[in-house]
Length: 235
Image 1 (cartoon, rainbow, N blue to C red):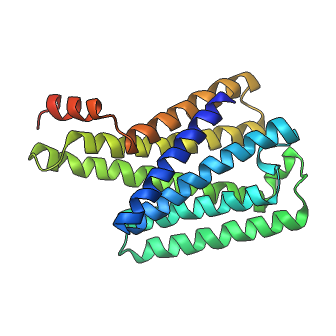
Image 2 (cartoon, one colour):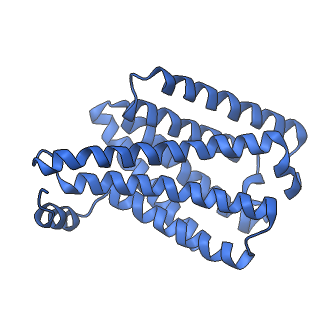
Image 3 (cartoon, rainbow, N blue to C red):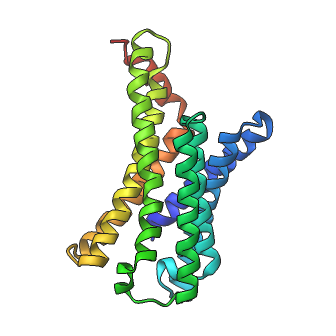
C-alpha cells in the first residue's frame, strides 16, 4: 500500500498548496480543486487506516469515508464546470444530476447496509454510484486533453509555454488513469476476468503514476519547465 501512501501524500501537499494560494487569489478553482485534493488525501489515508487497523473492505470502512467520497467527486464535477465550462448550461445540469444520483446511491446503500457482498455490485444503486463517480474522471480527462489540443496553436505562435501544455496533459492523464483503475476493479469484481495478481500489479503502478502526474502538474520542478520551454520550439 506504499503507492496509496505516495499518491495520498502528493494530493495532500498539492491540495494544501492550492488552498494557501486561494487565500491570496480568492479564486474559486483553487478553492475547489485544493479542497478536493486535500479530501482525496484524507480519504486515501483513511482507507489505509481501515485496511491495516480495522481490517475492513476498502470502500466500506465507515459512513464518513463514503461521505468524503461523494463530496470529493462532486467537487471534481464543479471544478470542471467552473474551470472549463463556466457559461455552459449543460455543465450545470450535469453537476446537479451527478450530485442527485450520488446522494440517492449513498442513501440507498446506507439503508441497505454497508456489509453487502461483492455480488451486490450488480444492484442498481451501487452501479449508479460507481459510474457517476467515474464520469467525473472521464469529463476531466476530456477537458484537459481538449485544452492541450487548443494550446498547440498558441504554442506555435509563441503565445503559450510548452510546459503549460505538459501540465494540463498530465492533469488529464491523472484523471484517465483513475478511471481506468476504477473500470478494471469493477470488471474484476463483476466478472472475475482479471486475476488478483494483475490487479495487485496494476493498482500500485496507476497510483504511482497518478501521484507523479499531480505532482508535476501543480508542483512542476523548475528544471522541467526550463527544459521544455527551451527545447520545444514552436511548430
